[in-house]
Image (cartoon, rainbow, N blue to C red; front, top):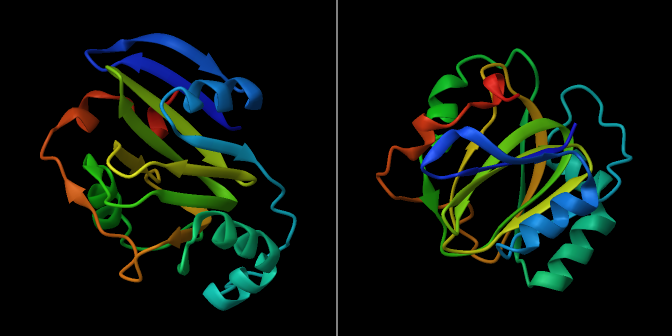
Length: 183
């Protein structure tokens, strides 16, 4: 279930807000300039669907986002349950970083957690199928796909280079609950 949890960045043991209400999630994230919307990920993807099949299933949604945001490049990150050797990828995403462009994701299967650090708070958004999230360029964040990841997200970029992270070197991610420990 899509869930937003907010903590002060210096007090991960104290929950300030926890909600599963889509409108409340969108309003809270809008306060830190993050776009959050519930869409419909209606296409049934076959086992083993590759990037081209996923993008073809969501042609209209991708075209609308490309037109709205001027995105030139799309790709798909899809990790089915039981994918071997995902721990190095998980560690890479769990390090706080920023991007020089917006990070736009439309989840079409499974779930994963974005952690957004802004305004002295950490916002954990557990995204699932039907969630669209756009994290503004320069926002400190990290992502947790869990110890046994299962998700598929369409990613959109303005830079053809795709996903490029600028790591902050801060160990803040280690002080907050990981996806497998989320309440």
